[in-house]
Length: 415
Image 1 (cartoon, one colour):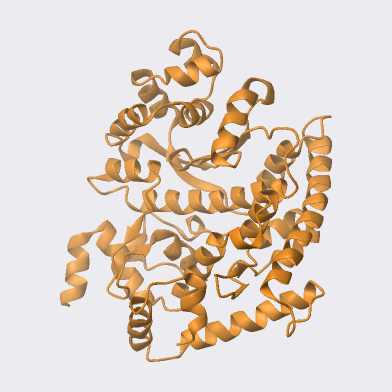
Image 2: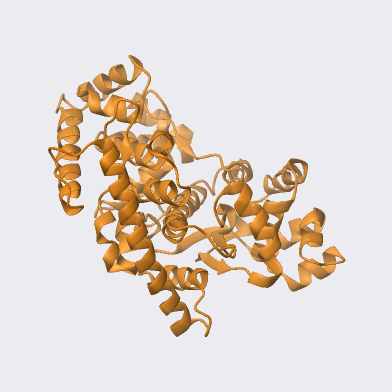
């Protein structure tokens, strides 16, 4: 096993090495880890060349600053593109957030989702009205709030305003939901009114450092208005994180749809809404497999999941995963550099230098010095790609069956 993967992931040893040995043994010792590390090294050198750097004589610090320069240039190009889209298709005002919303809506990607019906959510909100959110937006009564705002905007305001006690009361009602309270529909990608939401948005952005509210149980992504004077890199950062959240919505939606026959379906919805990532137990890994990993795996296959495992609850078109770099390039071709770079990076004694667009944009717009650089999205993508290379269809099918029909999974093990 090469040291690169262990160091780049900052993984605890010897546990990481032992886990890889187990995966190698289960797959017939194909040296996947070594091949993957070499593949990353070649691809990273190609990206250095694209930046005009010498692949053999560039320090990690020089790469870091070159990536920031690239982000600044690409952010300006993306800003122009989004403002043009907004002025052409949305309104006379060339608002960059409106341009993002339009660009995401017209992307030719899957936007199917399995989400709570508006009527079911409104019924819950009548029982637990978000009074702090109501006051923030200038309403005097819960009835007026529920009448004039959509369930998505109400829940977005509540997510930003209400305390933990209120959210606990809300999700307690989620536990009572059944599959009949859900429907198949398109994702909702919306921009909230800039004037009424500006104050709430500015406070939220200051605290959370981004302008997005992701409501997985609703299949909704909400954009808050960006304050004036946002630093360079903010547009790419916001759009990259939005694309990441859309993949998260897809994965959560598919998982809830898969589990709709379970008697504890409401508890699963409750966990998804609370931000707990769905996992499946598998003998292939020492730890549970993230469902989004399985979603990504099947999205890359042309064959269907076995009928007895997923149907009639899931169909092939439900399983979608769209790489962020490719989606960015589809919106603005000048951002082509970031395609296939999500899991690329180079090592430094004090941690990796990420070529992931989300890390690079966040490093740039937060003006982080080299010593404080972020690399979490790179590490997430690298771990994801490594695990994808070890997945086995039989192990995944067994894990899915165990999630949906535990008694059938036991029969598969003993057969």
